[in-house]
Length: 251
Image (cartoon, rainbow, N blue to C red; front, side, top):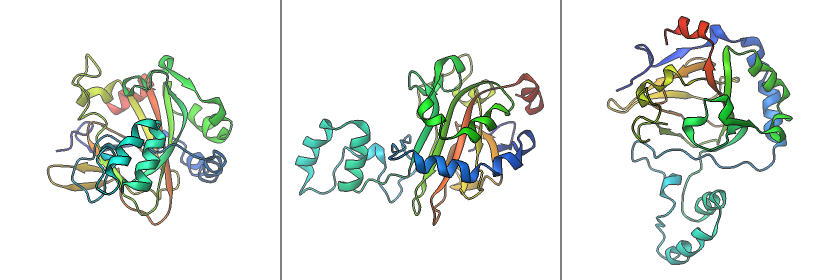
């Protein structure tokens, strides 16, 4: 079952952003990603269904018994990102993409990504994305937390996951995890409109396509992206909406 926001799977945010400016970001952001150099692999919470591929939550289990013992000895000696790459190269683990953080929570905890004072700038990355940072300043937020770009690999499904279902209960008191969106807001952007993003109904095994370049959804709900023949990217800005926008959205 999809919890959604006020009875809908997602909120189309196009009327609240400058679409012309958003669409113009495609090439500048692609250029910035290209200039970043090697990027960290994206980690996702455990996938919701038993898909054909192994994800990053399954890297401890090595299926190839001929290397399993040595694999288990090497894995603890590596950093987190090195473990991901090692598992991808040797253990059939699929990395569905990478990311660039322009702002991130100081604690690295999900609960803090919406709070401006608990996030910090990544100046090194921001200088590569001046057009994107200018665009963010025009958005209807009273405060900005995390800013992150997600890059999806071609021919790999964007792992279906929920940000909060498997998290500890009441991560955002006094709101439940299901209602956290009312205080913890974000807009997800698809400037090229090429990423095939969807909200997923686990009970009915149904994908609800997100047919917009800008949306707000309940991260309690499962979501992911379909396979594309090319690399794609999207970006997300977390924070707190202005009171005016909250009234319009009935949050």
